[in-house]
Length: 365
Image (cartoon, rainbow, N blue to C red; front, top):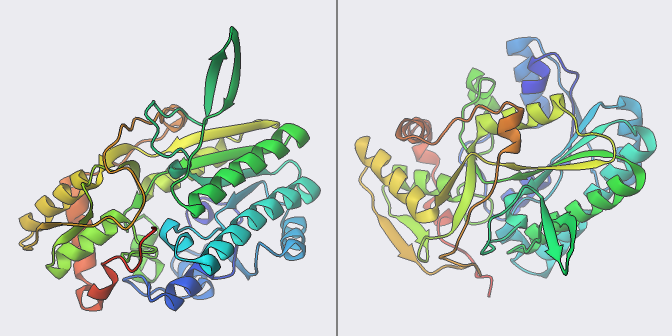
């Protein structure tokens, strides 16, 4: 919607994989949203801007080739992956689906662009989770290594905490191989967890709101805390709550994608940007939500539960994120007012909250 509104021709390709998995696993979002065709109709009626919708599968190479050959995109933004770490760890079927879908879709995107639109700029959604939680500072994708008197630059060491994150590491390796071999232009955005509901476009109509998941599979920790606060039940903190990550507002997600598109990577370069604006621990987020909720009159507290994931609950974390700031990113930071605004939107849908979705349904071990 953001690109269409600013005058670009936009084609969206999707096969509803996440929507299907969410329904199958009783992980539906808090706010029901219409399908893409209906959303595009609503957006057109409100703005006069057209978005072409194609329902197809990016793991189908022939279908993707046909679309890329016909559209001849200047930019291809690749989001076509199973996005849940917990889902990928649930069992063999879930792991296999995640591995096949994510690696195949990335492989197909590379070959479609290379074959039919070689000047196209690929913008790939990576994840900060690729880096893991090393006991050294996290650089933006690359690190200079000094070894036995010699120096070279390498991809920063990666150690994902789930199969999903491991597929994203494979994506980065695939992209780097084809960039250095065939001269593609690629930006890999290492994104942290995104929060927020309202953008200039989604504010036009509730039918244009993003999918807001709060369950144990597809939900994010901040979403879960806010919905729990509105439901008046304790905020469930996994373990010690020292798990720290980089977060960003959905408005800044749009900014980052737009900045990357308007300032494309050079041919033969894999540009890696760490896409976040602030770092928080799980405990800090719980405390921020608790304060905001109580200021609005909601009575809740923080409850520590056993961590179902295999992860460090207390660790060093310091990730660089200067690249997008240098390109012009103007961050929207997480303030009490921002949390309160989200809580008020969630409160409109209080009757749709399913409290059975809060607790972990399985463990990684």
